Image (cartoon, rainbow, N blue to C red; front, side, top):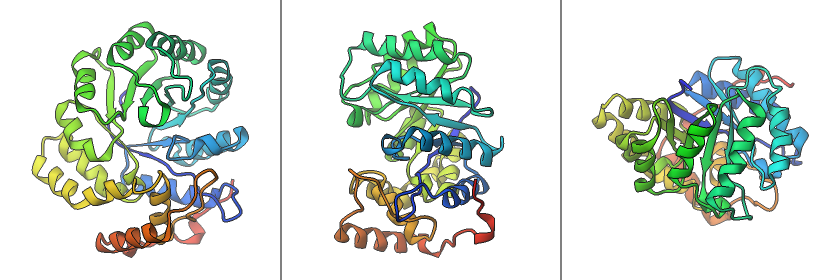
Length: 308
């Protein structure tokens, strides 16, 4: 996998009646790419994948691949706590021409052992080989931590396991991944607020939530850090540190969708069991977005949106 830099964990826009807003998704993808983002991740946790019907999930991935049209790599989220169900769904993804990788998080709720995680991801790799796989470690959501030694075992056992998105919030764990990973294996920070520290430790980039809102600026920050231009990187990190925190004032992606709606880019609509942020949070988000100049950003003209 050649991908490095900054990628966006895309939101899935919904209409006010709860249906996927394909027009808004089309516009968001083009805006991200026009802003210089390095890669896109569809249907992850920020994309509310757990609330999408299977047909909707496949449609969102297909649209993202079709609109990207090879301009940037596209990863598709595919996670399940049943390995059998995961393989069935992954095989459908593997039929989408132009998809660059499958990103799969650790199984939620079951709390498998490290050997269980190894067998789970190995089965996934074997079922869709040679399509690349990005492991996704986000224990705050899944209840289980994917340990570095298990990542190394998987990278050795399956040639198409190419990378890990590490969102444990533990810099020592990310550093252990960097130090022990085989040549060519990529490590991406999954935490915006730890992006610079992670790249300083040797990570290859950032898989971001905040880049839904500031794709150009976060790409500049990550590129500066990767080029050892730390003064420029730190300046951008300081400017947007409050935004990184604000995106988690309530459950993600509630805050980021709220700000996107204030920017005129999509509805703030979420799917139950998620609900839109409380009014007090909304007012704080609006104030912060205004202070950062985000509300001056205009949406793409309606003529640039297409229905698939």
